[in-house]
Length: 434
Image (cartoon, helix red, strand yellow):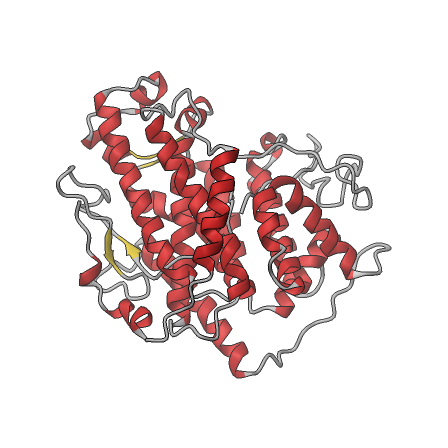
């Protein structure tokens, strides 16, 4: 999903206009013609992530070996045998289990869960107005994805819009036009507000839409909190020593979107996959998308003083931060980028295997997102790995060609065997070396 939102931050306060506290002229809750904001940060979450059930490990501590020994898929996320308990993969896996357990609990109760009454703020009397506003934001900033959501049932469509808007608002906290005014305290207040809306106490109409969504679907609060943690990480961290650190960041800012979205997207009744494996699938595509963003935006990030590339892998390739800032495409850089792109593609390859487990009406937008985002890697190659001064993008013609392909793939039904769900137990078979 593309995520970015708009509000004004006063230099003398830590509360935000778009939260409905300050000047409403930039994004008035009742003014539907004032949606104007730039697309923030490399995150650009273009999909409600969905993919398969693998976990990503490494050769040594970096995740990348030489060109002849390249191992990134070591074992299934849902079965991190032999991993150190404090690894990033383990931390993320614990969240996956919690989310899957929530879904199982709701299924067993036949959906008869206690739901607090949602009180709309101000003079808003209809929840549909809140959802309509979320839809307008989605249509403005994620046009292709928005069209895909129109294929979903109305209830799921509105819920995805609400999640999208919250993610965009959160993303803009640290990368929007007023990011310089954001402090850790401000993020703490945003998290407190998140807890309130999960308890049925929304602050504004956009909060109200999400509050209603989390009461209708088995959505857990942890992925939302983790996304806020990713914003905190961006405030204090500008380099990543190894892939384990980068993996955790990618989960915070992108993998979380998948965990938020799967309960709304729905799992096909025909799917034989375990709930855990489907959530691991959501995580995989989110990681793939974020790695792609990072590779696309190397030059842009460097100009902002940020390097989202594993330091140890740069050193292995004979590169340093100074090479990134210099922005010269050399043979060393091409070799380094080839390995980075291999990693991202392996995440996408595994992501493909899980999309068919979604409900039928949700597959097309996810397939479209996956295919379009993966093409960015092709464009980086076409630019001779110059991601310093040239921004890789997919042309409108290629986007249009991808849509019927995505639709065809969305017609593939889930396997009626249990082979998908049992893959989580076959960790050794997923090791891949290039």
